[in-house]
Length: 202
Image (cartoon, rainbow, N blue to C red; front, side, top):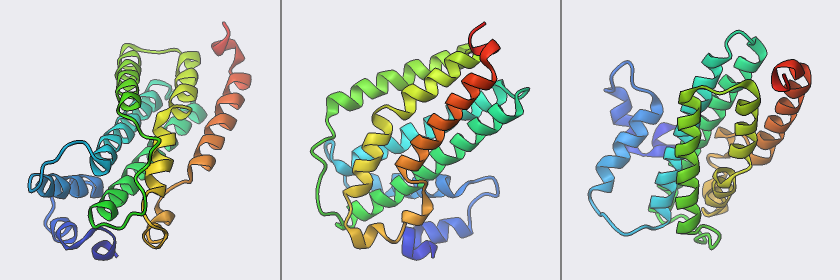
């Protein structure tokens, strides 16, 4: 399964990886080794690589929020679940990257522009800084709305669709579809604003 999905190098590295290494760590380490073989200008594969980083940064942000609101067990569990979703998205994008590099794609998305990526990069840095500084529950829920309604899911969907259907069927089971993910976020943030109205609107 690993060989079919991610290649022999990932499989071999997984066998000899440190006990603390995650599967995603192994995937990214192998990609870094391959990337140095042929450095090129920004292309679809590099955009995928950049957004893998954004998905992982989102995972970090949600993990921090889960710990920040540990006294509210349902809120903490929500952020922990979102962190798992983002890790899943990163794994899917790693597979998308592999398929693109193997030539298994049918279009390069015309909806992905460098200006959008730069704007999103600024947004992510601002979001991370605010979370590290400490946010209220109201601010945390607003951040979820902003992050999940931003380019990260739009680009994720476009990148996922950039590979051919035959390739995509091999790894679709690894991730929560974007529409389901956003719907889940909307439902939960709405419920928390109602349940914790005194905290959200002191």
